[in-house]
Length: 101
Image (cartoon, rainbow, N blue to C red):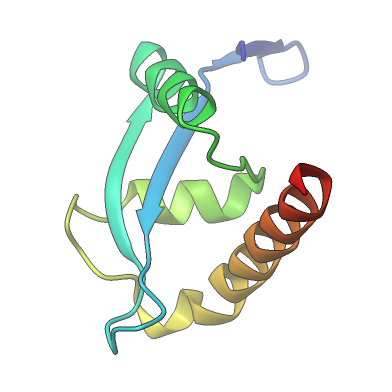
């Protein structure tokens, strides 16, 4: 993951990442575990890859999540977008289980 320079606006954009925790057996909405920019974002992605956690890219969502505090539950306004992320994660997990055996 690396940042890029937008020559039209002359702005260097640092990578941004967020991590969520969700337990479908509980009634709470997903919770923010970590957010960060730059090196911290790269570390969040590295830890996710290390643990086989699927990665999902959505610049608008990560920007919204980065405005929340760690341990905050996601607000209702983000439920639909996060539901898409969870559906993606479940699909990836199901595919991995099929391949494994």
